Image (tube, helix red, strand yellow):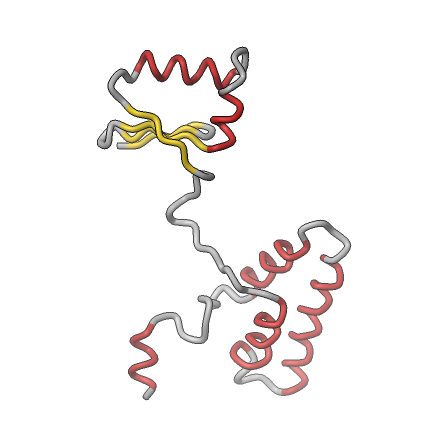
Length: 139
């Protein structure tokens, strides 16, 4: 059983308490709220060891590393637009380009475009095929 709260994750089965690097830095200040939490955890969970780790990230969260503008353009033109006319492909590419241009006005524009792309093309799985079995059947 595990329970997590704001940078702290308690793994009862492992008898470990995981804290993020950021939480650890804040806890190093004696009068901070995080320091009080650490002291309380030490009292409540005697025998548990503390382990510092990076950001706590959901294990179910899917990431799309490498999904850049060129890959999005290629996907829209060649995969999503496979059965579309040239005019429809051009419209979809123009919609993508419009989003890219609008998003450049904001900091972190890549995340806005990526969010739009994944909402517009939910079938995108990081490549052409959603699983390897489809590739074997296609041959």
